[in-house]
Amino acid sequence: MQSPELELKALMLAGLGGDAAAHRALLDRLSRHLRSYYKRHLIRSGRGAEEAEDLTQEALLAIHLKRHTFDVAQPLTPWIHALARYKMVDHLRRNRLSAASVPIDDHLDLVGTGDEDAIESTRDLGRLLASLPETTRRTIQAVKLEGKSVAETAARYRMSESNVKITIHRGLKALAALIGRETRA
Image 1 (cartoon, rainbow, N blue to C red):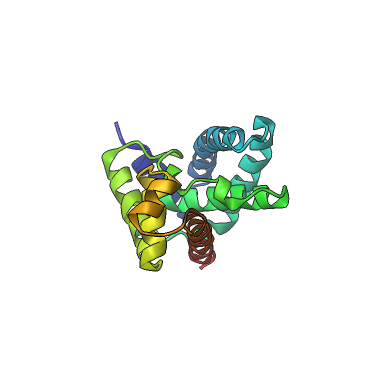
Image 2: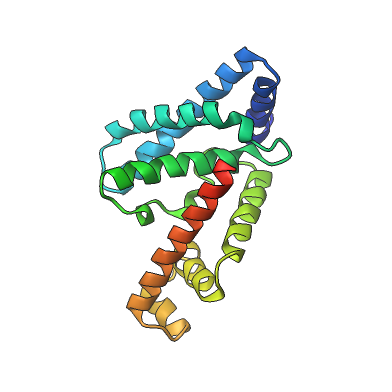
């Protein structure tokens, strides 16, 4: 049995090669994953799960329209996750919610289940985090990835709690901008 990454990437490659049935199968498979992903995060953000259908359709349309930008040498699931997450961020922004409401550490929730998917996604996340200033990277890693409290992180790095919160907020915005540029490129 193939991992979801391999199956989905094979469908994507076949679709890019002109196989319309494979492209439809890809979108069908992704729609189930995306719907579940959006429901989970909308509920976590205090929103209704009924908004998930609209977001799913927006994401599928973006995947369809942006498929030519996919780098076939790279894994598919991080690319899909970036598009899906930005549709969520745009939706929350339109509804006056913060992009910080969408956690960055949920990158494996979408479709990755195999060890190779986790390794690839972790490498991509590490590359993005490495582009941030050291203080920003450390605070995001401590609070968002390691699960440390803001108070623990503030004490650990000799910062005020409000400075930790501001640093994380600005760092997440910077990551969002980086991913957005990579997605559009």
